[in-house]
Image 1: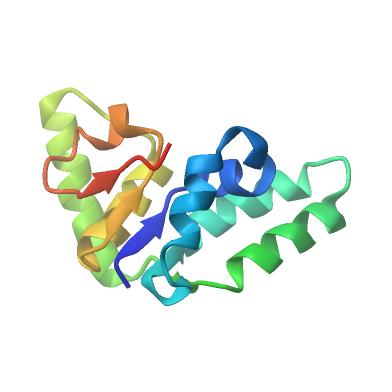
Image 2: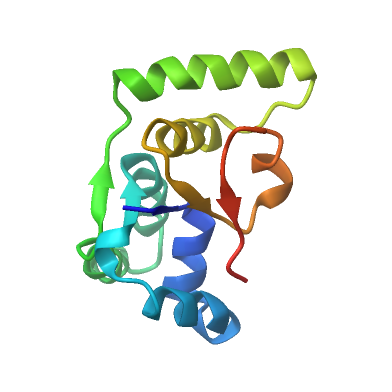
Amino acid sequence: MKYILDTNTCIRYIYINARAPRIRERMRSITDVDIAVSAVTKAEMYAGSAGSHNPAASRAIQDSFFIRFASIPFDDYAADEFGRIRTYLKQSGTPIGPYDMQIAAIAVVHNLILITHNTKEFSRIGWLKIEDWE
C-alpha cells in the first residue's frame, strides 16, 4: 500500500464524479492494492449514508467502493500517534477535527500518503505526507 483515502476524496469519487475527473483518472492509474481506506473514513461515510434519503442504496454504493481496498483500523499504534498529533497541534494553536487526527495518525503509522482535498488542515501536521488529486 502507498496511499490512504481521506473521507472527502471518497465522497468526491463516489458522489461527485462528474466534477472530480482527476481523482478518477489518478485512481485508474494505480492498482487497488496500493490504496487503503481507514475504518474512521468508513465510519464517517456510513454515518452519511445512514442519514441519507435512501440509506440502503447509499450504503450499497459505499460498500461496492470500499471492497476494492484494504481497510485499516484505528489501533493502539495509531492511538499513540494520535496523542502526538493532538499535543503538537494544541501546542501550535492549530487544532483540527478529531476524525481528521485519527485518519492522519493511521496514515503516519502505516507510512502512507494521505489523499485529501483538505490540505489546509492536514498540512498542519508537518510529518504527514499528503497529496491532493484534484
